Image (cartoon, rainbow, N blue to C red; front, side, top):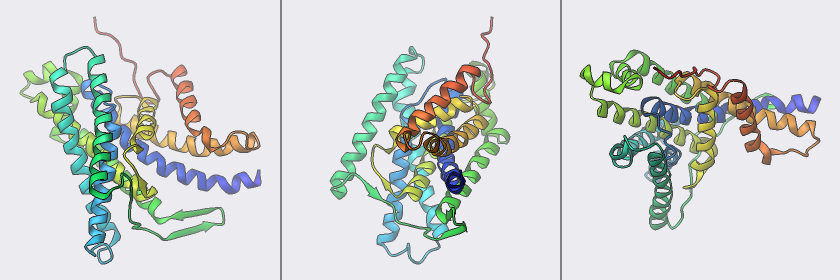
Length: 319
């Protein structure tokens, strides 16, 4: 027990850091679902493209000698802007090319289109990076290398604190944008009733495109922060993480922005600390390789007792 209490704080910090990444990606899923009732499975690759865009910007700054002269937070902001703009623009293009022409098709059609876009983006990034650098993986430069030792069992890397702080600021900014801005009200109106919103002079297509830009931008920012935290990225990092983020969105309540935040944080913490506790309880029989199984077991249990998710609401059919 003493050894478990020694390790648990570090696992909690790791889970919190990963949970914020899950939450930011989950926000993209939940925003698009809230407006279009579409599960955008290509969003995991939007996250991946954001990670590559942010990392390439950092490598560009490093090659020009700027990375050693400018403050690390400024370099991170520049990389975040690159990731947000690239992924946000990509999200708009995906909506315009892959989803808008089939918006009123049966739901299975957009689902298949999303899977096709996902595979296309994976191979496109692999091809571009392979032709450009003869490798399809990147290692992000280290911006924050200091470590704060609080207790012998808890060492806090500065980059983890930066990831948590940056993610928290962006999620709060998104919540303010959606709840208080004019465009945010338009997004909520379109999510509630597209036909009525169009009758109130709201350009539904523009609002949907904006939603894809904002959701994609959050995914791109999450990708940049992921690269900052874990360094090594490749064109396939979005697959498992995207499934986890979608799980977080469902766990919190699909379509609910606060639910996506809560679901992401809860999943990250439960995944990181739960597997440590199970490892000690089973004397090592259950290890880190079972953390993905644990995440989905938690989801199944939550949905059995609360199908709408933690903060979700039951949807009743109008008659």
